[in-house]
Amino acid sequence: VTGRLSRQQQQVVEIVRMNAIEMQRLIENLVDYNQLPRQELVLEPIRLGVLWQERLANYRISIDQKALQLSRRGTVDSWVADRHKLRTSLDNLLSNAVNYAPEGGHIDVVWRKEDANLIIEVANSGKPIPAEDRERVFEPFFQSNAKRTGPIKGSGIGLSVARECIEIQGGTLELATHKSLPVCFRLTCPPL
Image 1 (cartoon, rainbow, N blue to C red):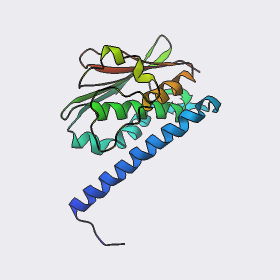
Image 2: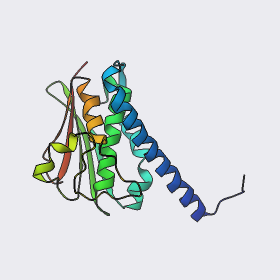
Image 3: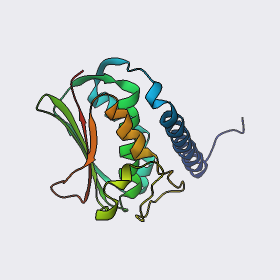
Image 4: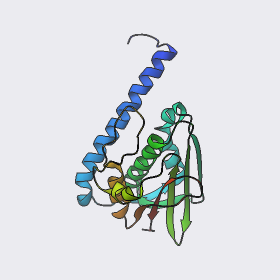
């Protein structure tokens, strides 16, 4: 409508768009949190590499702006699960990793099959979660003293929604130990 945008204007518009997407995600988390116990599972085969590619596309600008180094690898091509609930869990884990990793930091995403389960780990550099907060991070609206970056403050509900979405499918979400990064969330999704 206003004509061609300069490169700088395009960057500003893209930042506004990404902030709107993040706000929408936070709103959806709040709605999902209230409705999760009543939702039925909708199972379907999911191509995991494609799912991660879609999720990462939503965070590409933030990843690039913070100069985050991202490694992503998986040994499982597809898995049967509830796509919406798995996507919601992964979005929340990836959002946390991007927002809590320091500039120039690292994010490591791995998925594999272990004991018939799908294991997904999302790890990031930054400050470790304090021992007294390790279980509380999954409580609704709990916010640790850890510093989140970005223009939008977190709601403290993302990890509880992520955990609930996986538990509804018979799985688990927990803090785990990573070989080199201080923060790692491990999602275990059983075969359905």
